[in-house]
Image 1 (tube, helix red, strand yellow):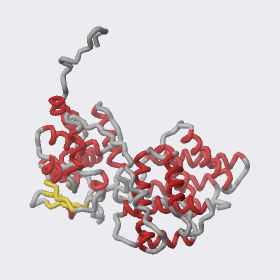
Image 2 (cartoon, one colour; image 1 turned 90 degrees about the horizontal axis):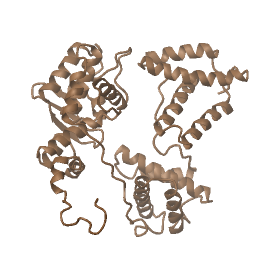
Image 3 (cartoon, rainbow, N blue to C red; image 1 turned 30 degrees about the vertical axis):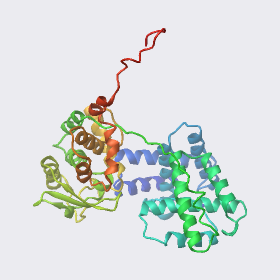
Image 4 (cartoon, helix red, strand yellow; image 1 turned 120 degrees about the vertical axis):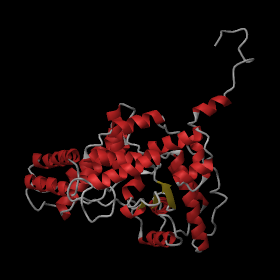
Length: 410
């Protein structure tokens, strides 16, 4: 990309219009234009009338350095990078729809390794998330091998596996290492079955990796009620927000399922919602509570834009397209928390945890909680028991009989 098709100032003006037509909000457009403007000024300082790849590379290096020095967090780094990528895409192609790359595709592998990767990923009917992880590990390993002179899998054996895992362990968390080990084992099982490896090396890849298990907070139901009660249900945005929050708080729906919800998924006569869960790819039937049903009805009849699109939740800005990311309900949830004066975050999932925790605390059986939330495995409910302080307090041991003797009192 040597030159934009129009002067920089005109390019910024048309870019702002394109962002508006794509449904980006006012604050988001200001943020994107501000960052695009800074990149433009860097070019203008050296008298450039077109884009210079070295200046663009300097921008990315600066953002990477700020992340490395922990001046910005990972999510901020991703935002800075993609805002510029979106601007550059518009300058080159004339659209602002920035495709999200598949996980692992940023690793450029040789044609021979790409052939192996394609056959490996086509060897089974994998969930899209699993396929992304498989690609990520395989491509990372193939790049590592190529950097050490390997052109194929002929000489890639136990020593290479150990070296790769050792290098990964120096820069990855235990959770990432668990995934690397797991999918490397799957890769070698495929390679052995395809006669591309002399061994599956299952004995070498069967060690246990202890994963970090975080206990995320849940809002007390009193705070959930406060959050719902604070929403302005007279405004159109408030009606949409209240419907979303009700689906999370009373049905335990995930943000990704909320944005994918369609009008046909709601059975008003039976009082239920039928969805194909994005995370598990399993069907779930959720009972439509009175509050959630009334909130949905109010939003659809009185606030939802008139359009042929079948998605329930749409952008208010024209064109009235569906919400494209699960992060949007999270941002709305955060704003509702701020308005209610309760601890805020972007995690819409907090409402799901609050519902599950309240059910466990009130003695509802794990199988019932799993059915209500649409979880496939009952084990996934166990983490909510850790938030049940009322019953956990009964398990606490007293200090009677173990007080220190001959020393200072605790």
